[in-house]
Length: 294
Image (cartoon, rainbow, N blue to C red; front, side, top):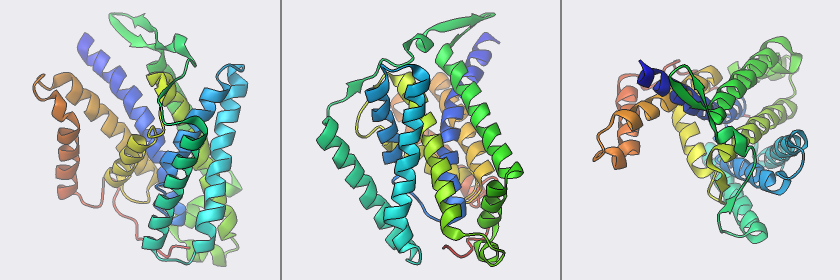
């Protein structure tokens, strides 16, 4: 029972972080139909901003980290994607790769390519005992923050005018525009929210690892895309559930695999995903029609 509780706590923490990765990526994908591979660069810049601001009072540092991610995310949309709004998907895909490589190289020129250590929230790496289970404070914080962020996003999408416009645009952008929804503004809001989520996720990821490098956003972006596919392309809820499932399955495999198979952990995890998609290729929450990308 103790091991089961421990695995549950670890799985919820990892899954919560994966859900944040996937949610930020899926929001842009569902509204703008853009597979934003530059999302990893937004995560990276937010993590490096935490390196710069970690000595400041933590509320101010957190605000600056999130603000930097929001500004960069909106700037990417304005500079790279808005001029290509009518371009085909391949062009947008190449553009997102180009922006990602450009941002990564700019960070390398400014900060260097060597990994850096970040002493932010180090006290959260200590464990607390809950009955017979010892849980790291950062795992508890990750679960709490994930619930808070997803709850706030749900409230925004269901209770605010901008959120309702986002939902309408994700269902049928052409009809939404005919109803008066301004395309560029709605997409900018989606990128801004995606950036804010990336800033929060980057903070939690950096607190867990205590270090960062210029490729820190690569694995989260890969995980986010896999979670989006598992949950169902274009579904924010599906991406969130897909991220949670990936995290839980990853922790279970890490805990139960024999030691000689642990080096193949990722291969086994992705094999599970492939077999799931063979049986349900549209993802857990089905496939929404691709619609007209704007």
